[in-house]
Amino acid sequence: MSETRTPTHVILTLIATLVIALICSPIWAVGVSWEAVDGAGGAIDLYRNSHCTATAWMARHHGLRNSGETDQRLVATAWVYLQHCECDKPGSPTVWKVADGLGKMFGARNRTAPTIRERCRTSSNASERASFADYSAAIDAGRPVIVTFCYDSSSASGLAAAARREKSCFSAAGIGYMKYGDQLFLICRHGATTSEMGPAAQDVVDAAALGINTAGKPWGESGTSLLKWNGASKNVVLVFVGG
Image 1 (tube, rainbow, N blue to C red):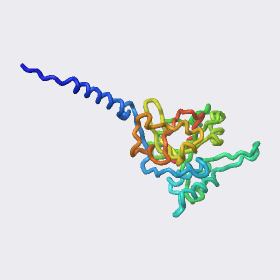
Image 2 (image 1 turned 90 degrees about the vertical axis):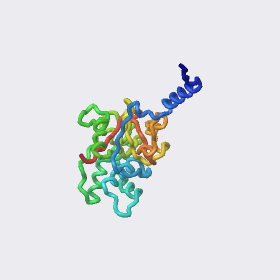
Image 3 (image 1 turned 180 degrees about the vertical axis):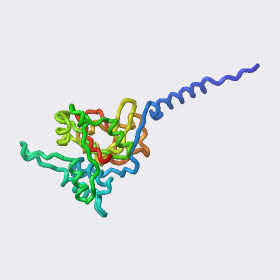
């Protein structure tokens, strides 16, 4: 009886093709899941500072932008309501009260403000803390969150210090999340270039380097990045709106 054999070069070619496919294929099978808020508008280009830009994005999301009002004008309005001079302290530092300022913007536009809660990742006071699970629950419910990444060691002492948003802090509108193996990422609209993000740039995730597809995904859109939940930041402040 005759015997049919596959030529050796064909077998080697098949093996090489399989190896290349395993190396080059996206790593979704490693355990990647993500969620984003439906209907989240695009990023607002960074203007004035990140705290005002993120707050303006949230105000726009909740329908506070007037007819004909530009994004820049909305950011400028946020600038007025967020900034606060600690004039009794040396150097009269300016701090940025996001939760309070956003609430005032609702009032100024004759809208009843939803419940606005400010929490942080790191605090010895349990009532001040919010976890990644709290953040992801808000996203799952369709509610974006203003997130502020702080890099000064003083911010780790709790909410009062972190919510001052001193100069090392960077804010963005959190519109989603990703779980990549045991790593936790936030999908953030910020409208900034990496060079404009200050210390937060070190927590931007290079999705392509991890084999994560960006085409047609929120984190592949202009002014939007994946940022690490547990990266180099000393604390993360979260402003929950609604719920």
